[in-house]
Amino acid sequence: MRVAVAATPDVAIPTLEWLIESEHELVCIITQPDRPSGRGLKDKESSVSLWAQEKGITVVKPGSSSEMLPIVRGLDLVITIGYGVILPESILNVPRYGFVNLHFSLLPRYRGAAPAQRALENGETETGVTVFKLDKGMDTGPIFSQDKITIDTSWRSFELLHALAALGVQSIAKTMTLIEQEVSPTPQSGAGSIAPKITKSEAKIDFSVPAKKVVQRIKAFTYEPGAWTTFNDESFKISRAQVSGDRGGSPGSIVVENHKVFVSCGDGSCIEVLEVRPAGKREMSAIEWTRGARLADGVCFG
Image (cartoon, rainbow, N blue to C red; front, side):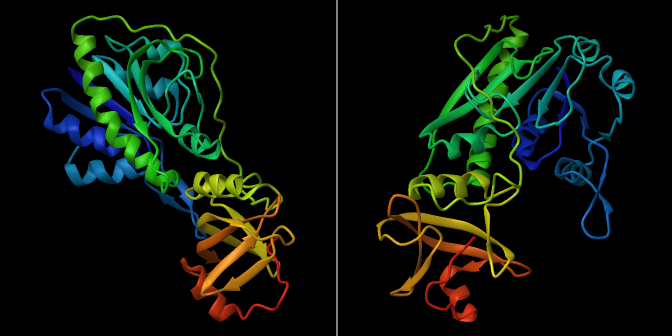
């Protein structure tokens, strides 16, 4: 098949790597226009754009649906992976077999922008990927393929995302075979749930909830925008932590003991903080941070 991939983040790269080695023709990669980023607001290319340049693959960056139309005309299929643009039906129906999307959940659960992160936030032990035909709804189209994965207890969001990206290759491969065999996708059934984009405000750590929930949120938000609190009135990110029994103390209070850093949470529970990133500094171990911070007794986060 003559195929294009519409994608922005690096989680699309495993599928792209497979496509260029497959019998299919990867005609081009469609990605979002470069966006200003950083303090200097310089235009920043997407991860897949940089990858495509290294591989010598054509990259197109349409800024509107009208610019998309001539790109997809004449294609058999367009695969979307985190493209980040809602396309009208007038575009979706142009390729011979339409558009399919690789989504990082077992639909209809976790429809939306942050399915992997919300699965971690909710303490799920299993998730997966779904390849479905795009329609005018938000992740509501009929399903071609699904594959499951067990969530490792150590995974944070970016580790789960990369595991799902690797798993998605086999789902895409199966889907393309089904399409060639003219097998129709199956409509979604059952109650769905949503996985909205994570905001910076909700990524602020609330130490008044039980330790298990605090750790789940740190795992979920440690990618973008980052799980954060405040220390000495400055933003302070906690990037890895684990539940550590009951210790009492006011939520957010910090105790250093036996070369370990503990923070009290709700219901008398406690987390051990393992990795942190203070404002303006690199990521480091929590105990390394305490050596420079010279913590006073009774000091708290938040």
